[in-house]
Amino acid sequence: MKAQATFLLLAVFLLCSCKNPPRENAIASAKTENETYYGPIIDMHIHAYSEGDPMLGMAHPPTLRNKTYKGARTATEQKQQTLERFRKHNFVKAMVTNGQSWKTEVQDLILVGLANTDIDSLRKKHAEGNVQVLAEMAPFYAGITADDPSLEPYFALAQELDIPVGFHVLPGGPNYGFHLMPQMLGGMRAYNANPLQLEGVLVKFPELRLYIMHGGWPYVEDIKALMYAHPNVYVDIAVINWILPQEEFHSYLKSLITSGFGSRILFGTDQMVWPETIDDAVAAVNSANFLTFEQKEDIFYDNAADFLGLTEEEIKAHKEN
Ligand SMILES: [Zn+2]
Image 1: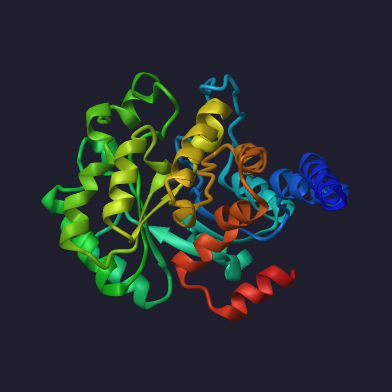
Image 2: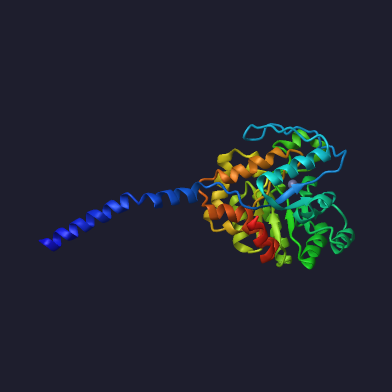
């Protein structure tokens, strides 16, 4: 009888412990799930402009979350407002398309991206240390897909030089951009937007360090198929983290994470002439309550550090800051 009673008491105790975990544990698990990440951030998708660019001063029409953004009026303003946000959010590295002119101010921070130039210039600029990433490749806007033979030398060069390639499909340009900016975006077609167009390239250049910009949204199943088939495919989550309704962005992100691809998701903003989008992009990841703190750290920093091949010293310096 005594043994039975003891067993009963133990069982009741255990049952109670399961139902009511110690307070410290409850706090610890809540903290892991909802903790805001303030550590170092690598942005894999930033743009610099030259004065006179037609995008400067352009307001962003209402996004799919019904928000508008005021456009920076000059290239200097766009740079200053962007760099202010780099400081605010602890950006320690950024891939900046056409970012050469920013290097004098923030040399250690910038990886220069370039794509819209001929192969010989790219090779020369890379040798001089003036190009580190082949990005942003956006033939999509001209109605050209990744498997077009004219692009093959670019992929061949990136593989040979062992530099990352950032390739753009949808979205990009404002939603309905084809209708709003036909002179700039008139060549884009939704039927040219599927990321599977990159598979032939991946087969031909199996060592390519490729990241598909904007997460390949909305083709989540096809992106999963590509990531499953090819371990060298990464995605950035630029634009989709501020142009889509937050619920849709979170559901897309969650789908990639639950499929096991959480270590190949790179943070990016693609601020263009709207630097305020950087604040919304950072908040969109931090507000994803299904992410653990470690998963946020992967997205904001660790995955890009790995993709870019940062040294242990660099990583340590970034994390100690
Ligand atoms: Zn971009």
